[in-house]
Amino acid sequence: MSSQAITTSIFDLFKVGPGPSSSHTIGPMKASFDFLKEINLLSSSITSENLNIEIHLYGSLSATGKGHGTDRAIVAGLLGWKPDACDPIKFLKILKNPAEKYPVKFHEYIIEVNADNFFFHKGKYDSPHANTMVLKLKDGEQLILEHEYYSIGGGFIYRKGEKQNTKSTVTLPFPYTSMKELKAHLSREKITLTELMLANEMALTGASKKEIEHKIDTILDFMHKAVKRGLKDNRVLPGTIKLRRKAPLLYQRAKNLAITSDSFLIFLNAYCLAASEENAAGNIVVTAPTSGASGVIPGITYLIKNHFHYAPSLMRDGMWAAAAVGFLVKHNASISGAEMGCMGEIGSASAMAAAMLTYCATKDINAMESAAEIGIEHHLGMTCDPIGGYVQIPCIERNAMGAVKSYNAFLLATAGDSSLQKISLDSVIKVMKATGKDMSKKYKETSEAGLALSATEC
Image 1 (tube, helix red, strand yellow):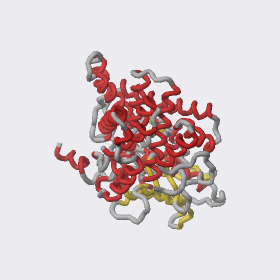
Image 2: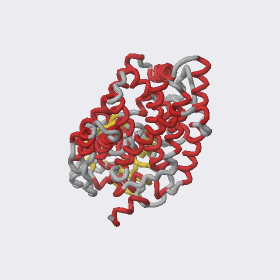
Image 3: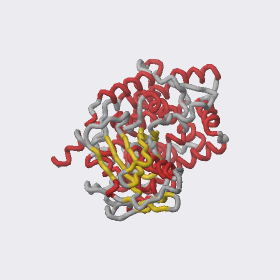
Image 4: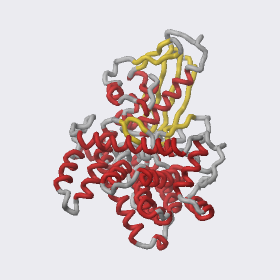
């Protein structure tokens, strides 16, 4: 386990932005926005008709960037757009015409960019992360400024030469790096998980309890709006696969079967598919913890709000439980599909959702840990092999399957005695990290193997 205390905000984990990928869309948009700010810190005297911007993509960003919209996300960031304020309709129009030029503002000067400014480097590369992008400002062939960025999953980025954690100097009331340490705080201080997480968040962000709770409610509202939109939209998803949405039909069938025992699961599947299909369409979703896994927790929370009728305060309790597990996975392994395969995305989301369900129902931290451990354990080794580089097949159905697994993990953890669980959450996260490290890169968001090759056989 890492020795540095976790200083991730819940609003860094649950972020609003356009689909289809937090690592390939939201992260690159944030990186190019940062580059825009950096070039505008340069002297305004640097003007030339030969000024140009080069965008170099490596690793998974190069392999599946086209299908994930990485290029249009980078253009959007260079135009000054931010993920949480992005107009998805305008966003999807970027680079529809590869020859169309977009104005990047450098002080009072305009630098035009289009598809010709992108370089997709496929093959081996020397980089500390599988999602690497390099942006260069040049005057002809003369390099003026260069920055290398890493999109590390869930929309998190860092720039080469900078510390990954700029919040490391913050003093938290309850620092922890593992579930063991988190549980020790709860036992020693006689406080609830919600109280601990809220205290740390207030110290981290400087926001009040009321402000934080309002923002969590807003995040939940964004999740549920994605579900509602997806339940009504039966159009074909963008891209060459021509995949038609399934959520509206499934939702209608669930309503027709409302008195049967199967309707509960069909409703849950419909909700998860709806949010995930919205992500695949490039619409606004919430990373939970990634865009590729943005159907699991939204589907679960929509279910517990509308079927279990949980109060807003209980929904927030569940979000804190989910965040605690997400923090531990991100801190001690990774939530990136390019590093961990799909177990880093759907596996993490399923564990987080299982923790949410269990904590809401029991407030038992040991049962919550067991549920999260089960959620990860039964996603170990899951590959990330999207057909055509689109977050559609198998990604959309995997969100529904991940949610169903999270519900079963909740049942397994609460129906028995959690003290009998032999494997801890900390242990399974270590296994997850080792498994991701050992996994062939062909199965980590490159579309070079697995189901990604099956389209030619269909």
